[in-house]
Image (spheres, rainbow, N blue to C red):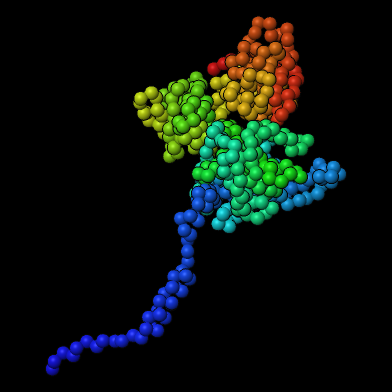
Length: 455
């Protein structure tokens, strides 16, 4: 039987028109992800940081007064603010005033998950604080830029919990740099970025971004009664303060004997070893001043903050690999962390005589943090109970800037004062400290302990 020829099907012209119409309608209904023009640098910048910005809520009690100057002590209010993730384990930077006095810190991530936060460290003078949550998995860290090259007129973006509306985005330009702002009787800011991007209540602690999606500041304040005027703390100052706070947190668990500083070049990365204490874990590992730490453990070190982040949850006795650049060489060393008590024993004279554990603040960092008439100071990281320092009210976080007539820029200056042959002629010894924004003085009646010898 012969094969049948294939049938030719005729389709009326109206059917072709219907098919074309249906196809066009289907294309019109298809989800669109935006043209290249819509996917602007601003959109990309916001998308790149969204997951690293958190919203903060909490209840606090007002004990001062309200905006009208009326006493309103004991009134409970719901506070709100914003924060940025600086470590995948849940370390978050925000403003101190956002979490100050808050009983329960509630943190909401971009995906809607909620966590209880706890205050880790704070620096009231610069209005910065670090809080911690315990996330179920690693979190994305915000990309940090620099505030050293900002230009008036440059486009910026603010992200925050404005009026409680989570992840609100506003845009504007940098209006001015190096502004000094008195927000209230209790809070004064130096060297702020001024922007006309809308900064509203709830934006505090959130990032100010450049067009590349890099954080160039932390939004901090609005000017009451003004429109289009907001302020942010420059990110270089933020990083300096946060580095100090993370170093303090890490120093409560371990001692390395390292003092670090950023590289001198704006484009260079790493943590430069400024000083290695004698008989310290860093010295035993072979680290030397001038080395550039480029990795510690599994953490790449783009700046000193990364080194302290890597150490913050380690314990005494832990071994950590340290990769450094020394001239043209790249070396891999291993450092065994010690207890902070070992550091105190190595500085036995000061610890036993005064009851103080002191750590030098680099002079440039000191001036950035305290803007003081003094050249530098020693951060009090611990006070021995029932010591002469404890009895005179000195406490952790104070900065010792002078003893008798001498400045105390380095620990050896304290040892010099205590070891002077005419020490008894000016005992009790006058001390000068900085606490917050204020300087205080007092007198330490020191009884020299002949058994307190430097090890």
